[in-house]
Figure (cartoon, rainbow, N blue to C red):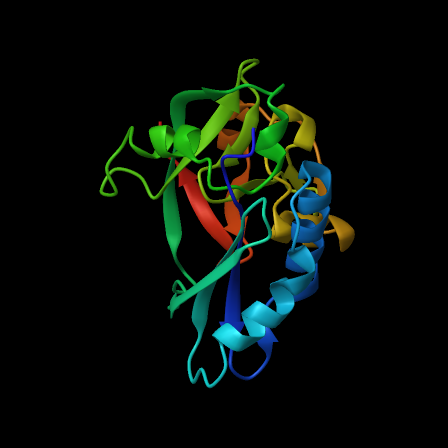
Length: 208
């Protein structure tokens, strides 16, 4: 099915440019190739034009449809305080680990929005999804990381049914994280972090 667009959400800093730009472009190009979408090569030029003259940090969202049409929107970005701790809950909504589309960042977010809708913003900052086997997958907008005291973060493997997040990929390449299957019980026994390329790593507490 191709009734969706690919998405990349980036942070732009006037002093240093786009954060993790090469990883974002690589993921977009790889996803477009695998799904048969055209036009990924033009993404960087569209991003550059969208932030021309920007004087403050921006949240930048790029979409690419199957015909190669690119749209870019921007909004002011305010980082979280360094001491922020998000409240995370386990969603009742389940992920099918066999759904290969989950490995791509797309506008088909019905499953994630269903999970997000289980609790109000006052009750949870993020919802963590499990697959049909009860394994931890990802948050609705974040990857999941667990510090079990070993010095290397654990993060679920793609095969569980989740997106190859850009921050996740960077941490794995830097050997600051490694893939490991996780259960909800594991999240209660270690130090939990959630993260994405826009906001970085965020300390989280599991609410049960």
